[in-house]
Amino acid sequence: MSAFSTAHAALTTLAAEGGEHHTDTHPSISPFMTGGAALVILFLLLWITTRFNRDR
Image (cartoon, rainbow, N blue to C red; front, side, top):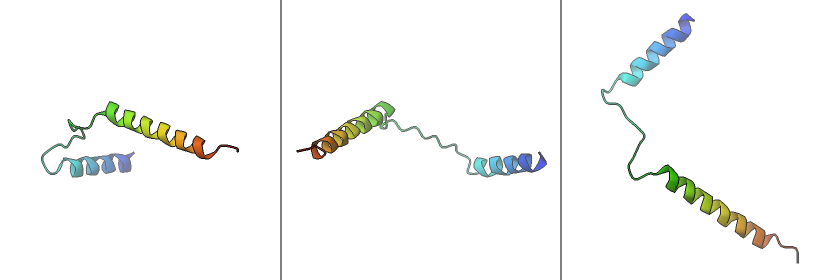
């Protein structure tokens, strides 16, 4: 377990350097908006696929 604790200590030291903590939250990016847009795009692709896959 010594190698794991040494690696953990080294990674936390490297991550702490720089002084400021970066968070991945941005006020203009909403998870609901992103998920809703992805759902709409997937439904659009499904509709296009079914239009081209008709048996005539």
